[in-house]
Length: 191
Length: 191
DNA sequence: GTCTATAATTTGATAGAC
DNA sequence: GTCTATCAAATTATAGAC
Image (cartoon, each protein chain N blue to C red):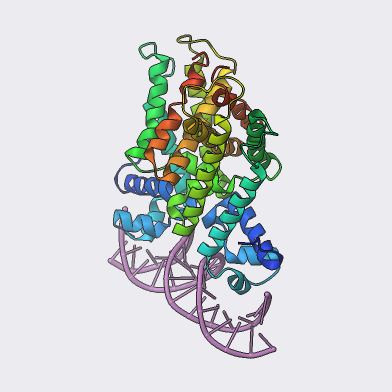
């Protein structure tokens, strides 16, 4: 459960980078090996199969992502600020990292994933929706809105994952901001 | 430019089905050949390279999709009805076909696509946004909304592409409907 | 932990007979 | 148009030396 350091950590870093650019079927053990300066056979020492490596990458990604979001009920942070933090996490993937959200890309190709990897992607979405629903349920700005918190949480997740896909394909970062600007529609349906 | 029939058409059908389930790197010429009952060498007769096949699949998909949407300015059809038609097209991919939107999946893995395929995906998104913006600009229900029509068009496209990813990964069709139910937030910001 | 060597399979693609 | 035959390269993975 502890985050691997050393070569194992480097391999996870490289795999995450490649998966977030080219998808699960878009990188090989040789790519990773060359990237971290060992031979592909040595990668198998750290991660016996690609499925296990993929699951480890997704698990670490989810843990980091949720840890960065923090406690959705933290009384020190207003719901609006938490939502801004959420949007900023996706924006950073696009603008700073020039990458997809790992699970947005893996989710798109979910039918071609080993079961263990698909399960991790599912978990990521479930945790994201739970976090968002918790934030949206907090009493604050505007009214609670017509749609239940879970529906609005799902919509925000889908909107931002889709925003990355569209903005990256159109090669226009501004597209993300245009889309993200509509998130307030869900946060405060009264407007 | 004419839509291929016969074996070429069958190959396109098979390739589209596979690409919408497993992505561009998730199917091979041999898969397609077995599917349509020929040998993989014969597939190359119809489509010399995988990149050309991929581009042809995406182009045919876009043409069909836009043709199905119809004229966004058709005075016989209300803007609301056109938006419903748009949402229904995505819903059909999920519920009836059990597939992704082709360009939603390809867009997610855009960095691993041959340039000609990526260009077709870009075109699909551009045409979709233009169609949606035309519908949203028509005078009708509610007010024009705060956000410009293009921003709302991008948001609807992103929302629905993301909805397919999330619903398929969570294996819950109802998730799509929950998300799609929020589309009216963009159509009529006044509620 | 990393290496060499290699197995076993799959991939996109071509040449040439029919 | 489709076939057989084949290629060169790439893939995941294993065995065993160091």
